[in-house]
Image 1 (tube, rainbow, N blue to C red):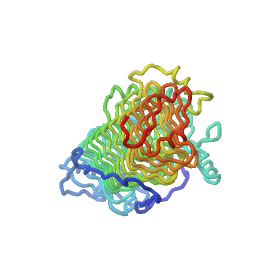
Image 2: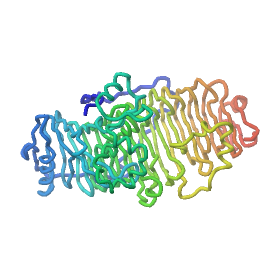
Image 3: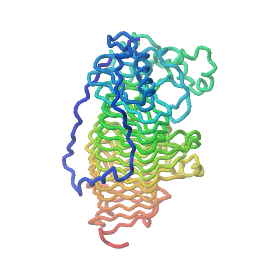
Length: 560
């Protein structure tokens, strides 16, 4: 089946971004990440197993599934070592990893996974935080230890054959080519599907989820159940280093319930229109380090997850002790992302020294009622952003539903009166520190949309500079700290706080017109410290419902 054509991608050298006009205290020094937590890395014997010795042929025609898997199995059975895929184009079905094996793809080698759905048997695994049937991932490992995928070659998942494509993400010529290739166009004419069965499932996925195992022709529906390019489940001591992973059917790399995961110097590439084309989704993992890597993808780039709703809470496996540093995200919905499937919890995360270039959002935190889970102890510093389409930083606790700004007239007081009691289904985001952000170009600097029954709590933003269309929009937050932040905006006010309980605003500079607007019946204890408190007060608007007595202006250094 021919679809939108793609070439093997040569990723450019990591880009250095210098943001002019930034002042303040400068970058924050990052502690030595090795002192935070230890990660066990895999090690292997010197033995090598060349796939050509097991019958693999790089003629661009022969299927090498059996030869590659036989080399891996023999390597593992003989105490481990390195399975080598040499230069050339190697066509294969799914590769099943084994313990004590380093799958090494040489520079100049392209592992091109088959686009025949029949080559990928159904397995019962996980997708978007839930147990589910999926087609077997092209690179798959379950309950393994001491494994690696290394080298400077390319793994291509032939995702174009699997993915639906939205018309709005294509040119007219691309859409016409896609429709001529076969497949099915949705009833509204806006989405292309690879076959009729995939489209049929899309109309009622929950029904098919419950009956798929009973269908005698279930293999015909496989196109809907797109796999990740790489899925590793319950594995310990894992190393991904060197390759380019591209063109995945679904998510690109999905480590799940793994420990001691090291990801270094990889490249991840998906078309910008790739549906669910995430870069790496780290789910319910402990002791993870992601460094020196490059992402250019069709959805979120570097994602932290821990299961969805009741199933995720019952699993009860948070993602914790994760370090992300020295990474570049060229495109993607979010550069660094937590959620929305975070029901098992997320804690003790360090993100530093990364560049996000042209992403929709820079730092993205998302969840919704029903998830539950606690996200806490997140430390982010020294992030460079350029050309962000929407928010530089967003906390959206109304994900996959209507945002408060979309709810009609006077939605905020309605949100308060209709808010449910906090329960195990209420997501909580707390104790998050963000420092040293340099953002040149975004729609908004910071956007917080907390829940009335569970505001975003304990967020600190400090030592940062933003050049954006709009400034800070904050709805339902508690114990907010903004310290030494410059927000150069085209529109005003610089800060717009609604129903914020407890905020310290110190040395925040914005445009020359309205500095601060405060609104909401649950507003209390807002403290503004500035070099000229009278000027800050004169450029502020405090609504009657918020009450002027709940906002205090003082000089910097003055005790309160």
